[in-house]
Image (cartoon, rainbow, N blue to C red; front, side):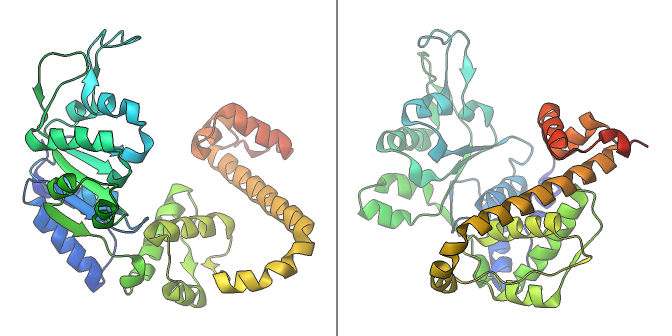
Length: 333
């Protein structure tokens, strides 16, 4: 079993920042991790709620045991209980084998309930009953079992408002909100955009085997001024695109038009719809060709290895090579 200190370092290494808001969040994570009880993480979409939940887990005494995430919005209501608690063989039609639910898989560790606000009324009752005493019964079983999991829930909704509107049970909110943690939006983390941008530049350059890049000061300036409504995830995806689409050592990109500017320009763009489509196709074609050349260079012309580097099936990569008339043999060592 890992020690709490060793695992704790692993849990925090993916959290990047130094702003006062970030330091306060980091302090709260360390404090919350020390107490083995239910946690409710709130924050806008893309702020890194799952990263915070993982940090809490790996800083806690449960660090050597599983961290099991579940997206509550992705599980149909009819399957929620089965996913959570599992079933015994013969519990229903086609139940030919027993299946351990997520609670059993997380035993001794942490069960992370993302988008908990998406639970239906029925699923909320099921979860509330389990949280009260950590007892559950797999479908088709006559014997109750103990869960022994720490529950961390996350939401980008205001659950108090959801309760007032009758969409979320007040008693479930009280059970979940023992230790609250609020993740600040990126616009409130002064100076962290630059740190995150550098982090993602290095990360994606290493992933694709590209030389280290730098951002032009003007690009970094408008990035720091941007509000980033999609928060850290939006910034990460933006840097990802820059790394893949820019060849220069110093990356320069113009600030995207604001919503108001896009609305003013909308009428002027309508006559150029056809041109826009053809320009977009050329950009995609150019990106595909350069990406294929890059992975083939790394793989020494080996199509199977290139497909692994690209994260694609060999057949799909072969079709792209044929589409762009690229001969893998020309890259062989």
